[in-house]
Length: 125
Image 1 (tube, one colour):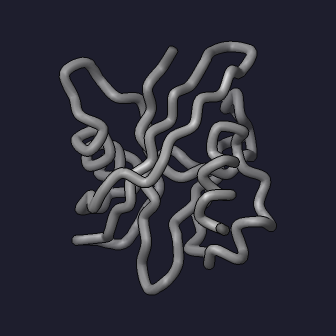
Image 2 (cartoon, one colour):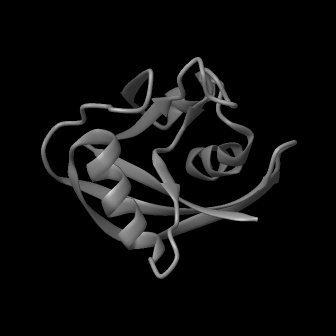
Image 3 (spheres, rainbow, N blue to C red):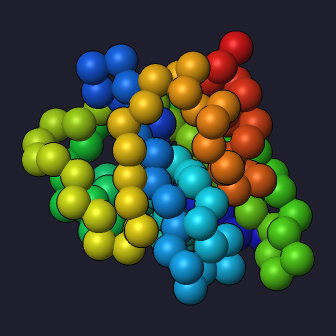
């Protein structure tokens, strides 16, 4: 099982979502940005590192939001989501095809990776 941290990054009442590239196993699926938690790293440290690497921004992590476990064909993911805020910079994706700031109500219109779906539902409720 792979532990992954995801940021529910909120700015001006909107949430940041990112679309995976065409060469990814989950090609064209939307997700909350983040990444694999490295050995010895907390989920919060992982998010700060990943958002710096993937979006060139500095974030603050406010607290645990929720989790999801999903069994893909190629691996099982334990996704830990945290509420976060933008502290410095504007997102410039380095590993995603695109990104958007969307309202919670707009989340339903996007095709999310299966592990992210329970988090979308929790946000919408």
